[in-house]
Length: 185
Ligand code: GDP
Ligand code: MG
Image (cartoon, rainbow, N blue to C red; front, side, top):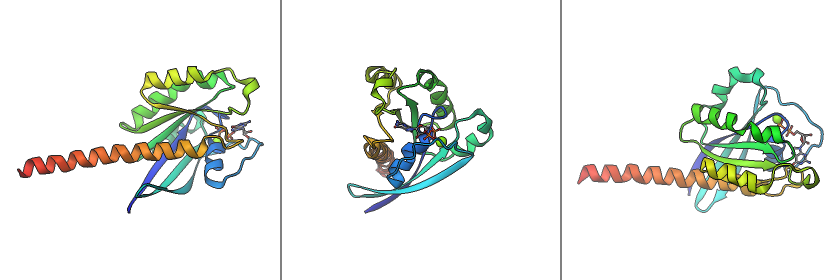
């Protein structure tokens, strides 16, 4: 069994549900009251994927511009990132590019998944599944829709990100091995 520790970060506008998705995944609970995240906090979760023992350290931060100065530190060493919007909030969808660019500038080669959250609020939805899919497709990444409230798809999206990171690592490792073998021959 191989052991891995991956740093995962969650970004997106304030109130899209970053803290709630993490809390749902790590503690299996949901808090309907909004508690603004100040600074950075992290949580740990262990997953067994195939033959791999993977510990995710999931970092959560306030999306506020105020915390611009902590962002480089927040991004440092991240293997994966969730770029999250709220399907009932068009602004949060329109701001995805900003978050995407920020992430790509700070962490080259990071594995990203786009999440449309709050799908339990179907009556208030303003961004369709197709729009979300289209956006992710254009960025060349996967798209998931979740509800931190009901828990729908939350575990699935975390596992998918861990699997993607693992498979990309495996590719990198085998490329390295191949180069070493090439040199030796
Ligand atoms: P953050 O600022 O991105 O960390 O957002 P929070 O996780 O603090 O969530 C903001 C508000 O939206 C809170 O009142 C949450 O209870 C609520 N919320 C988060 N996710 C969901 C969801 O999937 N469905 C519903 N109905 N409310 C949600
Ligand atoms: Mg928060």
